Amino acid sequence: MKINAHLDVDMVAIESTDSVTVMLELEAPPAPATESPRPEHTAVVVLDRSGSMSGGRLTAAKRALIDLVGRLDDRDRFGLVAFDDEAVVAVPANRLGDLGRDRIRRAIAGIDPGGATDLSSGYLRGLQEARRVATAAGATVLLLSDGHANSGVTDPTQLRGVAARAAARGVTTSTIGIGLGYDEAILAEVAIGGTGNHAFAQDPDDAAAAVAGEIEGLLSKTVQAANLLIAPTNDVSAVTILNDVVANRVEGGILVELGDFYAGEQRRITCTIDVPAMAALGLTQVATLTLTHVEVATLEQHVVTLPVTVNVVPQDVARGRVASPEVTREKLFLAAQSAKRSVEQALRSGDVQSARARLNQASALLTSADMDELGEELSNEVGWLNSTADMLDDTVVGAPPDIAYASRRVSSDRTRKSRGYKSRSQGGETTSQDSEEEA
Image (cartoon, rainbow, N blue to C red):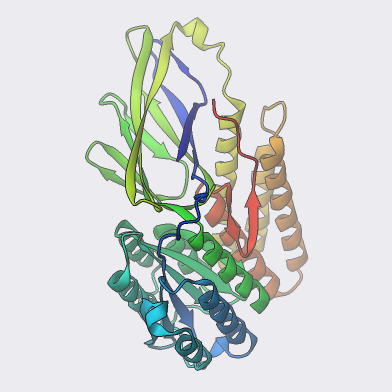
């Protein structure tokens, strides 16, 4: 795993409180070049078969699952849980070679639409199956739904906690929302807690592409169980994580759960450290970053430690410092993602005017930044914000389905970007930016 840390400023004024922002770049190793068999993988699919899935949605989902089965190896483990107002284990999780592909295909083809949507029942049963057969390489649960959970556990925060606890035990969760009626709050939070991906599939073809994208990632996974410990020195007053990730206060610091990485995947994790007033000049350490991860091919654990240091200088010298453009851009980018959460909340309540105003404010924040140039990523983000605001201009006089589309589009985009993903499948489409040279 490649790891590289950048500070927005590397000097602070003597006898003055200050803050510094650390941007950590992570890049997973590529897929092994050897011809040895890849590690076994475990995938359990939790499929919504409620009445609203009838027709093209369920047909496309089943077609995507049959294709998935064709891509897995006989050594891989697969399971399928279907749910409406109750959960049914359609395919008990086991090795494909033991289950038999024809048996699995028949089970998938035999799933028919049912009644209400007890998402938590299906998800919890899927987690049980995944934990039962998970290997040392962990397991992935893929949850597909097109509806609002109307029975069972429906609190997004509670379900995020369930997903986070499963992720801590090696079971990652990714979610795919199909159509314009699914509960984006629940599916986004489950994906964040489960350290997986969340994709918005507007139509059946998009759903099939999203499933294919998730499986492509699963089969190319090179890192699992990655986590980052941010350990500030005793005199540091606070550490703030700018990404929307699972982070828990533990002995010695803050533990950020990063989950699995696909081959070559790039991410950025950014945090702000509040530095106390220091009485002595010179280089001073303010934190230690420890990245721990397991290499999938060998199941060997790796630990990389980086110190975070600042130079304490006279106040007149500190006044002349110039912030790193790269870190400044990332802070602005993450501020735009934070704004999207309030856009989501406004759209869910039908307040289109507030949502559009918040999008315009976020765009203005980026374009008014005191920078020589925005760079490609921020320029693309401005375009995305403006196009979404334009979309809402059309819906002020029009159709609720357009508002529903905008809400899910914002949720899916924010969920991925706010977590630092720079190259990961999004609804079957890969978005990436060129990797930066290591300092």
